[in-house]
Image 1 (cartoon, helix red, strand yellow):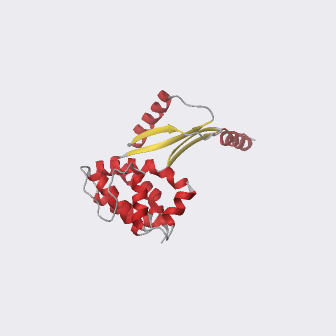
Image 2 (spheres, one colour):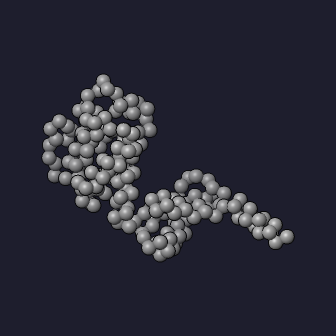
Image 3 (tube, one colour):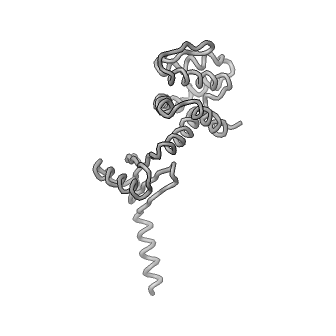
Length: 191
């Protein structure tokens, strides 16, 4: 089964097994580990059939500073979120699904945003947009869409302004090329 397909099932199980605040804490911890998946060495290790699953989960858990207990016999900590995170990592290691973790985080974030009615969007533009203008734009979108919107600016250069809220499927685009073509089309229709 593909990692993306498996991620939906694991994300659904994680959501069902945790409270909203626990899920938010687990996701924030996992988001810090997502950059590890960009390393080829790390991916080779977690996918290697030669490394036992207990070693994989222990190595991955050490990325969190060893805060959670590694499999096979997890110790109970004072924090239930960390226990559940340790159990998730252990299960994923046993099933050779640690590679699905970025997709699980993405799916769970979408579900959490849906529960909270709070979404994050990205603004692309040629020039930097200051914080008060971003906040004003977010407030305007919040009023228009009826959900809480938080915006951040990306490093991508865009000829115009583009606001994308992927989880809602909303994209607002003011491109110089598109506006020019629309004006040209309008003028040509008028002739």
